Image (cartoon, rainbow, N blue to C red; front, side, top):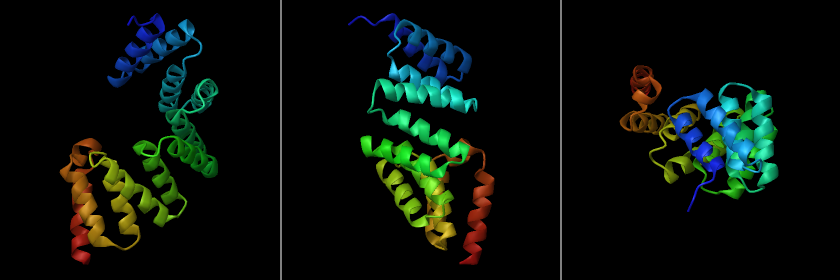
Length: 194
């Protein structure tokens, strides 16, 4: 199968995105769109780049375009949810996350994001359910453990919080976040309180 020029730009954009070449990735996604205007994945990825740069209007424009071109696109709904959340519109963020999960029930990133939003909204029971689902679906998604540990801690379930924080560290969380010492110290303080 021959790849189109648009696909070439898109693939190269993804490779550049993965190595942190944001400018090169954006240029390639834009080139893919210039070659093929109806390219929802390029719009979605470009939206993600703009979101990373905190250009929320451009991010939302590209997520909306992706969804106009392809109604069932969970990653674009996730992107919209992230923009709404950053703008402080928790209800629209929640609606977007729910739509992403409705379209892809095991979409770990969307479930995780919804769980964090539930936590922000004070719905700890729903947050705990989502973050538990995240670690069940993907035990290597280490942010699920630290997020769930935080919920357990807030709910007063210290033993479960310690278990989750230790699971986070055991899976490389210290290297991921650079906060290993702070989490280890937190674990020790929590053990002393038991």
